[in-house]
Picture 1 (spheres, helix red, strand yellow):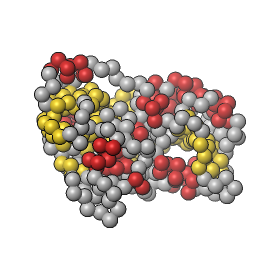
Picture 2: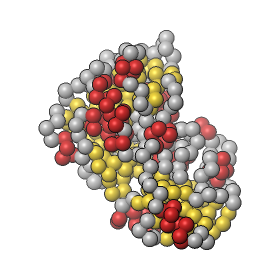
Picture 3: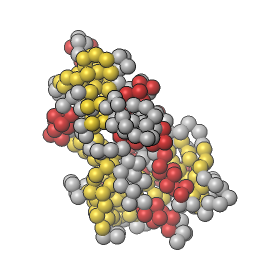
Picture 4: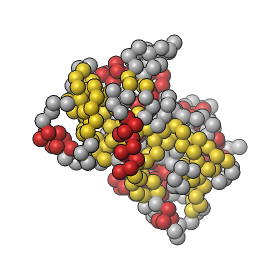
Length: 359
């Protein structure tokens, strides 16, 4: 990759210098993630589509990359920002450097940056638009890039374009319809391992087509962007409510709330990382969870709805899970499948299996 002096310029005027690898600028919402490991799973998570991602951990790439850890098809970041980028990884599974992976996916990266300073700024003032550009780019051109309208088409970019299947139809105990808003591969793998045969649908598939396969349950996946933009998907969910047991994760959690009359709102800087503590009120336990979201369900909007909050963040008290009392549905804001992150929360898939009639 081309290597030049570069900079991150934020919409509020903040400037951070570093070493730029790449041949084109990046424009997007600047967010940060706090994981100390699992960078490849994070790099390939479709929920980051359209964003410039800051890794707070100071060294990225020390164990290289391997396709077995990919959670999506390549990387759909706009850009990556790191403190130190390791160019000599050491791992028996290493099949290439992070830099070679980013070059293959045409993702610019700004290294040798004070990522802690950027993170403190985002925590204080919230996420905002930014650009990664060569250091000598004229200010007039930088301002034109900063004026780029925010995206609202991320789910359309990352959803499957056609229906496909996973699992052994003959041996599986349950048939599950999966609504793909940008699903991670380990979610699909987790459902298959629980004995589910999956039919994965594009995000805007009509409810009638989904219900026509007569699934035992419906799964609403994670995905990028503002849930309120998914008007077609929300209308389809309304038609599926009460017809089958439903389990939603992340974006699925948010669009289900919207379909039931609640509201969502943007968070100051969101939850992104693999070390987010959550209380589970159903099993009376504390979980360390993997999360990646910048929007949340507005708790005030739940008043009058027949729901129960079953999970809550221990960092800021925001809602992390909802049980719907009028129909067999529950949703969580975090990622029980991990990849990356703790693997001890997979019992939530068992809860979904029980809802479908399993034991």
